[in-house]
Image (tube, rainbow, N blue to C red; front, side, top):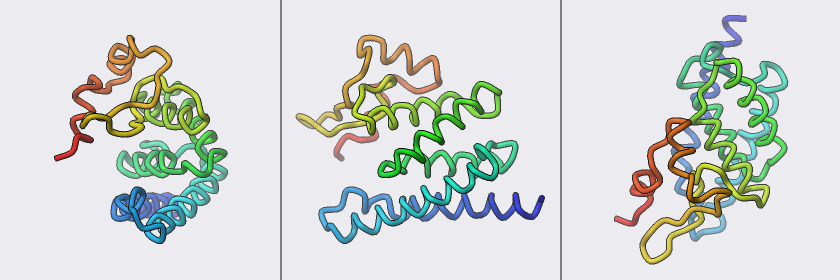
Length: 168
């Protein structure tokens, strides 16, 4: 079992590394490059589904902090596999309620899943685009409470967060 967990940890880390290397392709003007991204995230989403079938959510206690974050990243980018993303959300919700995962990643995944379902997000973590040089979030359920809700789960205020997305 320990060998299986070590292999799982390494696999999750490799998936995250491939995700980071390829992330720029997600918004490429070249359809062939975007297709490479879609194939990668689909393959990773399929594998995350198998991992959840076997282990449930890969928590930090099971695979270590970095590999648990890698699993979250794979779930976050499974945008075209909403069944996988929704299952990951349920597993992560359970892990957070049991104290074996943190609320920050759950907030990001919840927002991502809501937006992918065509609904308003809660925490303003998903950016729809840039207008007049400023990042604009997808619509939020309670826009006047976004920073308060973000603070409750350990996310910086929206204005600080979006400085990462501003054009250089």
